[in-house]
Image (cartoon, rainbow over all chains, first blue to last red; front, side, top):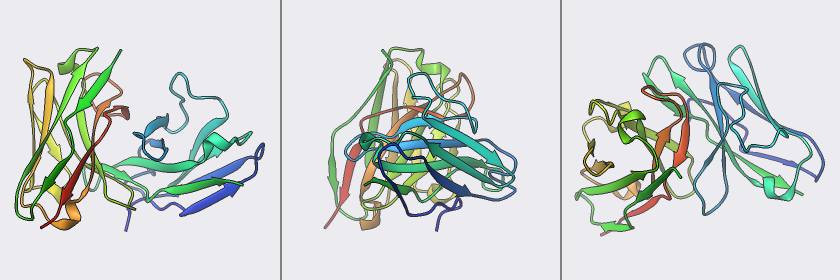
Length: 110
Length: 121
């Protein structure tokens, strides 16, 4: 069981906006930044969002992150077929003194 | 170009150890933490720990304390992860990852290609 909780699946149609949630606690998301990673099958994961709402260069502005209290969300607007992937949230856990991931959300583009 | 190139796939028997290498290029190796993250088949990502290549200092996830050892060789810009007392549920893809910022831990930015380790009798 993961320290951060994500829905196992999400879906949307091309052009739609979808959000993926990530729920944590006071020792994780409540006091630390949230990070999001995109993982396409057969490839290495890719950093999508850092420090809760910052995009690395090269990541389209269709991807955005937000945080409120002990929860966070990743939003993908203008959904495209190439967005079909697994998405993971991560945060530092003050209690464990280590990084923790959510269980991952498989996004299907219908 | 910043690159992390990992060693090849391994097959090990239960109880054995495995050592995976991660050769860095394109940046100052001692400037950035190297993390190790694994993914078992059908499972999610799991952080194993980090090494500070400058000092050699480490921080292991609680689950792996006592079974993982992370080291580095600054002369070859290579980080190593050794996992001992392997069990079948250690079968996974292991990734080395460079952190995003200098001298601290912030985000898993640059990923190696992954190394498949299979534990089977």
